[in-house]
Length: 176
Image (tube, rainbow, N blue to C red):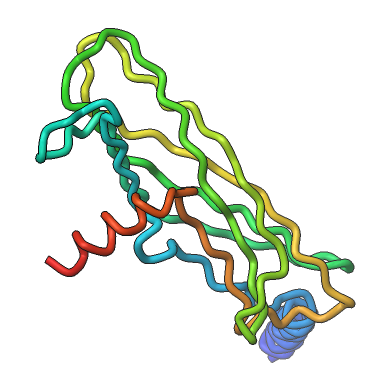
């Protein structure tokens, strides 16, 4: 009987510790911003500018994908870690080739107002004999807060930095 009472007391203490742990975790958790690719800016196609033929010649293309995110809250805001992949292609083996691309990361508030936008450069390296490559990139962002942990409605948007002709091309492709 004494053993059963001791066991019940131990279980109650254990449950109490777990409950306290759960309550304190609720204070440290929050709602992370949504993260996604901007529709139409998630792919890049570079054409040969010297081509005079009616059919464009593609020199390079890349598509964003495989998005992974995490966030951690501090007293002054949230730190976001955003990882994504790029599937890139050059039509002809050109030996060892480096291609420079630029992409943007923007943060918007629940009203859709851009709070911050940053441009990042990325060097994609094709080895000899390779015309397709998958590469990964990762960005760490800080979104300040006056102590709140609810970033519901906030968005982190990622896309290539494109020219107007590249945007037009992507829009035409999506309509087909």
